[in-house]
Image (cartoon, rainbow, N blue to C red; front, side, top):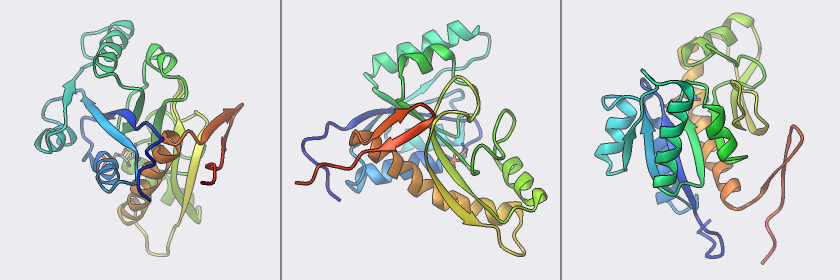
Length: 219
Ligand code: GRF
């Protein structure tokens, strides 16, 4: 679907992790370039200049900013992040592999504008310390038959914000944490771009714990 000229594109800051590959960042970037996601990536924020996602972003010509929480108190870290976000006039934030708890002041400054992706069906297999292969190994160890990914708004805790969308992936006989992770990741790329598109189109309304999707007005 082409951009609706009546929708002002998201001014999106993407936060990446120090070990992330940046595949979700580039799924977002590709959806923007394909014209399906009305957004502009105004900056990519990471904590290390040599992080793979930051290197990829820089090579692709995206604006990158390094903000390390090291040697900073939480309020100091929050203040620098907010300065970067305001300096780039960001109106929304996508956490794509960002592993930390986002400082409360940042969450509060962007109410229902910070979106995270998690590689399981929350609230299962989420929370502090549940990231990367640990999630998929825990899924395998538990014997559940389905896993998937969750896109959710970010609140002040780990993986507990209101859920925007969930995509189910079957756990197959013979799966390992790695094979399951690869299939979930493919779904993540589609789900993240789709959820951000709904945000850009103003279709997401949060009612208590529930995210309600409004239909687009028919033309
Ligand atoms: C993804 O699995 C995402 O769900 C999680 O961190 C991982 C980041 O991967 N939050 P990538 O850097 O986007 O490839």
